[in-house]
Image (cartoon, rainbow, N blue to C red; front, side, top):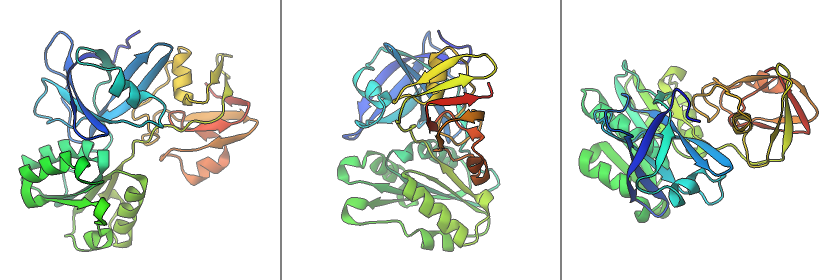
Length: 320
C-alpha cells in the first residue's frame, strides 16, 4: 500500500553512463511538477519485488530548476542486498515506482565565503545538483572528483566541459590522488568543505580539515551506505507485544516495515537520527553501523539505529 507521503512516478528514460552506473529519469504519474528541492537532496525509492520490498535512498542529480522530472543514478552492486540489481535488471522504461518527498541532509551553507566540493565515484550524484545551485550564484567554488579510470569518467567529462577549470579530475587508475592536507591548508576563512564518496575518502577529507583548524560546522559529509547482512534474530516490541523476525539480508528497519509497522526514518543510512530506538533487553551484542550515535551511546547498549545497525543475538527487546 502506498503511504500518504509517497509520490507515484514512472520511469521515463534509462541511460547506461558507465559499466556500473545507470541514470534513471522519473516523472510524476499523471504529469505535473514534482516537489521543489535543493542541491544535496535525496529521495527514498520504494521497489516492490515479490515478497521483498527495497527502500533505498538516492541523491537527486538533476537541476533543482527543472521540476518536470527528477534524475537519480544507481551503481550496480552485485554483492549488495538486491536494491541496485532490482533497478538495473527489473526496472524498465514505463515501470511505476514510489518515491518519498525530497529530503536534504547535505545542504550548502548560504553563509560560506567559498565552497570546496569533493567526490569519489558515484558520490558525485549529490554534488551535481549542488554545482547547479552554485553556478547560478556569485560564491566561489571548486570541485575535486576522483574517478576509477576512463570508462568511469562520464560525469567528470561532462562537468569539465561545462565548468572548465573549476573542476579538477583525478584518475586513480594511474595513481592520481587528492592532496587533502594541501587542499585544506590553503583556503580563505569562511570556506566550507563537502565530501561524498568512499568511506576512506570521507575520513581523510574531514580529518585534513580538522588538522588544518577548520571549525566542525564548516565540514560536511554525505554517507549513504547500505545496511550489512548478518545473522537472523527476533525482535520483541515491548509496547505491542509483537515479535518480528529479522532475516540475514534484512535490516531491522526493513523487517519492521515488512511486519506492517510504520517506523520513522529520513535518510535510511544512519546519519540523521530520526529512526533511533531504545533497547530494553539483549542476549547478545549490538552491531552499530551508523554515523549518529555517540561512543557513549554505543557502549551503553541501550540505543540502536534500525536502518543500518543490527544485533548478533537470538532476542532483542525494543521500547516500541
